[in-house]
Amino acid sequence: MLPPDAQPDAQPVPAAAALPGRCAVVIPAKDEAERIAATVAAAATLEGVDLVVVVDDGSRDATAAVARDAGALVVRHPRNRGKAAAMETGARAVAEREGAEPVAAPRALLFVDADLGATAAQTAPLLGPVLAGEADMTIAVLPRQATAGGGRGLVVNLARKGTLAAVGWSPQQPLSGMRCLTRRAFEAARPLARGWGVETALTIDLLRAGHRVVEVPCELHHRVTGRDWRAQLHRGRQYRDVALALAARRWGRRAARP
Ligand SMILES: O=c1ccn([C@@H]2O[C@H](COP(=O)(O)OP(=O)(O)O[C@H]3O[C@H](CO)[C@@H](O)[C@H](O)[C@H]3O)[C@@H](O)[C@H]2O)c(=O)[nH]1
Ligand SMILES: O=C(O)[C@H](O)COP(=O)(O)O
Image (cartoon, rainbow, N blue to C red; front, side):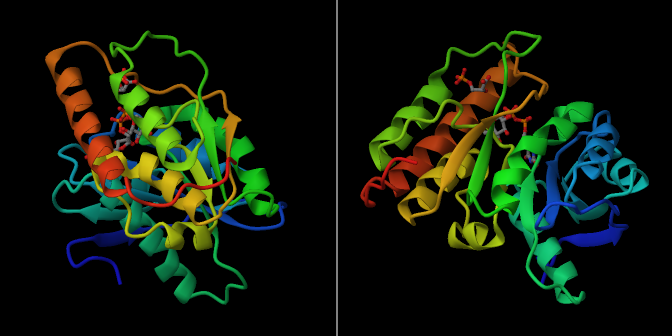
């Protein structure tokens, strides 16, 4: 069941499926009306993808309507609940869809940020290893972005060093949210860590559970976080959520390097 305050509507996006499995794209989106149509359209072109779900996480703009018009299945949180909750809601919407279909195997899940626009098509390299059974989770490594970010690497370093301490592996981009994983791996990582701690926790929890995790370069471009007070407040929240996720995992077992 979707959470009581989540409201599904609209249509799935049909697409080809020549890879050995199928995949659903889940796009958490808060106030992304400007970019969501391009992101949905690009995600729908990915080989193996036959369902695109947008979770409108309490947006105050027209994100839901624009996503629906672009062909996505849209699920709404009436109020903002954070990225991790949006990911859980999206995955549940996919499972509910599968419950009503004669499906042989559950779809893999590809999480894509709403602000990627047309470059969302460049998440394609994340699908192959998962759909072919060679990896349980792939993580996108982004190139240098056209606009310089305004951070000093504090959050990234916290997540990277915390992951190294927890599982003996130092990811290049520990916060990267573009990830493809099997349904089995996703369920093994539930309940997800809250808010912005979700990526760091996913990596640690899956490695500790013996899953195979790989980073894959992807030519993705997103809206970088700037330098103004809003941006710094955002970084403060990211730091808090990553620190909480790490603290909750401090005493777990180390895993083998991926
Ligand atoms: O309350 C929120 C806030 C954001 N989003 C969506 O989450 C995604 C990522 O948000 P964004 O504002 O782009 O965050 P960034 O600071 O750019 O995020 C970087 O760092 C995050 C972890 O801190 C990762 O989740 C992202 O993938 C990574 O790009 C976007 O689709 C948002 O619309 C929500 O669903 N709910
Ligand atoms: O801008 C970013 O890359 C993120 O908000 C993380 O900020 P950071 O530079 O403090 O790690």
